[in-house]
Length: 232
Image 1 (cartoon, rainbow, N blue to C red):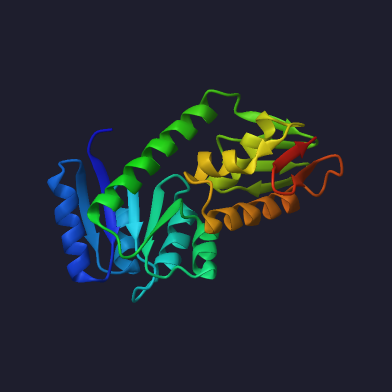
Image 2 (image 1 turned 30 degrees about the vertical axis):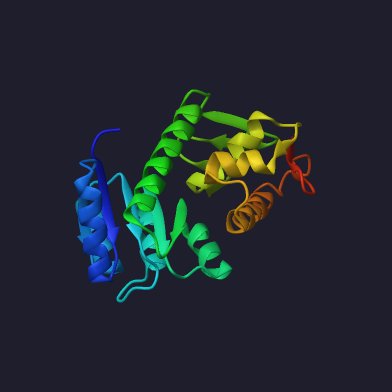
């Protein structure tokens, strides 16, 4: 995997220092620190990173506001939220704005190390799977452009997030067949029994249904308690 270039955005000076020191001791990390969301966004613009680890509740720019700005410029960089704010609305908003996963505070440096490396491994595997396939697919009267993350219908083009592309691609590969919820959650969230992840999946599916509503022959069918099926 090589040296992991990590941007650590955390306003708690003691926690940030402890985590930085502990991760760097492993020899696997090159860490840049930021004290708040605005510093984090500026560091993102100045330097290349493999992954960003950020708190949510911070001054100047919150973690979610920072993520929203970053996603306007880069849809590929991995973002892991590490926060004590674990209410469903906080987690849902973070996923919708574009995070890849989250870890709850308090956490140890060992736990964070595991989450980071698991997320990098998962992202590498998923990106490799997509690149091995044809880059443009037909879904009814739609065209799914994977490379540019766009869904085209006649003269209309919808820009997709990385997670939306992944989910639609997975359903397309098994079109007409049942795709189990647990398989989707495990593949793209790394866990099949986390209620936050399950609710986030529902939000993404509802968004994709809206994207595909122009073609009545296309639908994403939910089989309660089991999974999803793309009909096209």
